[in-house]
Image (tube, rainbow, N blue to C red; front, side):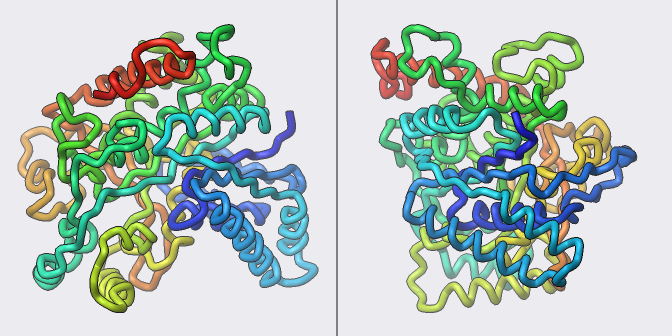
Length: 466
């Protein structure tokens, strides 16, 4: 094995995924990437950042639904990297390093449709054939089932609560009951379950070494394990959440989010629940040598899970709102500029800036990243929520400090656009404190049903989904 980085980014051809790829290329073209420098004060910055030789190799796997758009994005990313290198001072050490990096870096595109479990399994088989390991999995892709935009309501919110109107917008009206081709909740499958299958199908495949036609392929979880064992440092799994994460669903009978009118918000909260549970089990296995459902985790800390968020930025998802006003994009950007100027740190004007938290978590020394354990001062009570939010007033008058489920790293900037990573505490949903464990059990059952369907056994995944 080489010392090459292999970074998989889903939804990489546009939006935040494209910004992540762009920022990774620029940062890794430096001998000492600025985004890799410790930012948070967690008292463990003694670890030095090793300089990677520029020709050691970096591969970014762009996992996209549309191959043509993926190729266009790939070409554009190469041009952006060339433009960055051209702006460096000639004959400088920075220019020499970046030029050598440019010769060794590679962008690969692979087809991936998260709304199809078959496509996810096919992607896993393809990747397992091409790469010996994966150093980073960045689960970025996502969608929403918007029906329309409540313009009058948003105008009222913008004049009465301008920052909250943008940071926690409630006027993006969603519809429910939308199903995927697999008969699963569409937003749930694209945002949550599809990524879970990507991270899990390798270890499950190993349980059927003879019967399954793809049993010989090592897929993504084994590839993460392989990196951790080869590199002597953990691989990283980054789950893209949102500042709009909110527990607005019934976990007993709507865990696929087909009934709630807030499937986007709820899917992001499910991401936080399962990723934090996976990390809890990983730490348990690493410290105690055993864990419940040890097959779900890295038994010796070969990889770890992190939650990230891009903040608020303009992406193609806004076109799903069907806003019937000519030039509405310019009005939206004007509102973004205004709200950022009056004090919101979470509104970012470029995709490159929106990627700062993800790239920092991907590149910084792990000991320099705060966790629930080493940063107990980070609390849900630090955040001011609007009156329409589920958390409004819940933590301001508590007799006891609110319990923290996980930390979410979010992209932030000052009013002049200087970006930096931030961090916020995700509270435990006290009505359902074991949600992560419950969801993982349900995900596993459903996933095994799809695997049985691939083998030609069982009644089929559609029946199980119902």
